[in-house]
Amino acid sequence: MENQTLHQVAEISLTYRPQIRPMYRPQVSIVKEAYQVLLTTWDKGKIEFIEEFKLILLIRNKRVLGIYTVITGGISDCLVDTKLVFASALLGCATDIILAHNHPSGNKHPSVNDYRLTKQLREAGKVLGIEVVDHIIVTPGDYYSFAYQGVL
Image (tube, rainbow, N blue to C red):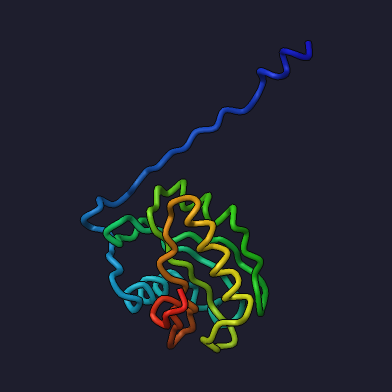
């Protein structure tokens, strides 16, 4: 009887169903383009209210596969789970990712925790072969790019 339960496990399958052909996907060659793509997906009623952490999933030529909201947090922070970040990148078949979160306060400058998280996710990406190409802090009228500032 005990051996029978060992064979009763869930089957796991990975599926990728792209809706747009690669040539029609937006391309984000510079941070301003990534910021514009992010703004189109951010709920305008939340951007200055609660913090959210999102990913832009990319393929090698910097074409956007999709945007995934990893977590919606509180007024001043959100707890980002590394496993969820890379689970979504792996399921989306992303080769690169751009990290993004908003600061409801409107302050575009990174906190100590923002630097720590960026380093942690960048190191995890190296192990998986998924490059973290930028981390963008989004506010309604401006942004901060870790890559542009030479921090990444």
